Length: 153
Image (cartoon, rainbow, N blue to C red):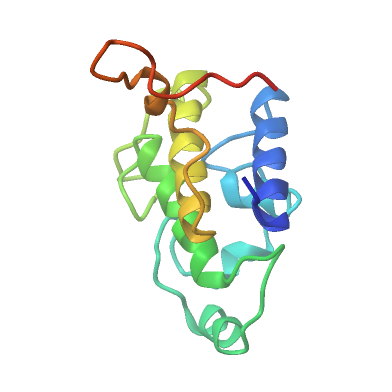
């Protein structure tokens, strides 16, 4: 399967962040988008609320100018972050004081759920099949034989 450079890069960065314990939903440098953007937090100024998909004035300017950050538009970045936070169990937009949030935001199972949702979205944005979809491995033909062959890398 051919994938874009931005997708390959994003998945690689998220993979490394997950395994290096550098993924935290509540930190703008360590969240999904923060890691995709090389652990920077400038993207947080594209919206007024963490987890919102609504661009603010600055975000709209960048969007209208067709600016891209590591290949992603401002609107795509907000979608990615909202997907990550929601899949991790946050109420959106996230405000520290009065929103539903997970008890342990760095729980590996919780982060895996967030990353799975984000990778699904990243694949959707690039119009490629979800690389995390393993359901085809369990499909069978009428005779009970596997429908697809498992290919080892």
